[in-house]
Length: 129
Image (tube, rainbow, N blue to C red; front, side, top):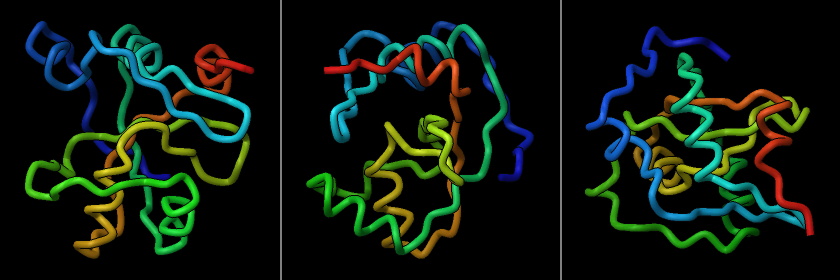
């Protein structure tokens, strides 16, 4: 992963626009859910640089498996970083930003910005059933 120069600079405007900390959001895969709202809190409390998340055609199979439904692409900003977790795989796993990934696939964009939680942060947002 290549680190981009962009870093988070928080202020009240960004808190409410870049990361919606008000509504509850969860990403569920297998027997585990991930608390996206808590991930956003972590990113708010511990700003970090973005990395380039490399979009590949292989992710389309994953989108199909999770039952992803695309949204109208005009409303989607590919410069808005997605949120990924580190689960020990070769590449980070996205938990927020699948509409941006889908739009990148449609437009032939090879990579989009992403924030990646550490393995410890990833464990802290897990909800086990």
